[in-house]
Image 1: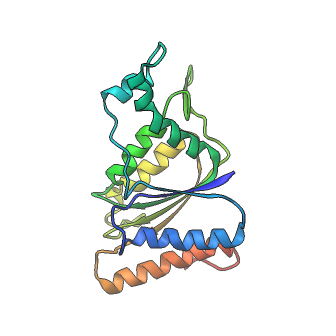
Image 2: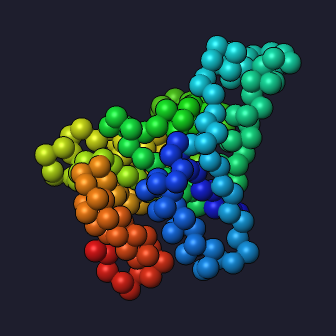
Amino acid sequence: MSLLAINSSPVTGWSVTRRMMTRFLDHYAGMHAGTPIVERDIGRNPPPHIDEATIDAYYARAEPTAAQRHALALSGELVGEFLAAETIVIAAPMHNLGITSGLKAYFDHIVRAGHTFAYTAQGPRGLVTGKTAYILTARGSDYSLGGPLSALDQQETYLRTILGFIGIDDLAFIHCQGVALGEDTRATALAAAERQIDGLFAPAVAWA
């Protein structure tokens, strides 16, 4: 089993979520020496958006053509990588109240009937079970639950829904709120988020 770390920020040098991911992985590697860590950077290298050829390949009833096999190759790689991991960590900046387009495209490649979910008489059933997912986010404003902007948050809602759809309901979110509200607010929010990450690896330390 392995840990799959997914960075989805197109930003590199000053990305808050990449900094959060680095802190998480440093802790994880220190406590789980020898456990493989697979890193997938869809911020720098986003998967292509789903096109007609890919959809045709997903639902082909006959032996796939060469073009369809080519269209399925990346999806198959991403699905295999996802299923092989025991722990999933997603670094996800909020873009326009939701997730990045690259992360949405990623889910479009891995949420596949017969692979990560199944159609049943009782409705869709997730096939990805027994995994834990950590979601590390950064938001320009403060979308804290119960706050004045909480109803606008489509990011956590989507991620909870899509991961639950494929069977992952053991989720932990760490939000870095208000990173565009000034340097002081950004620094305070990042310090609080980093303390929460530290707390994941030192349960006796209370989250701030």
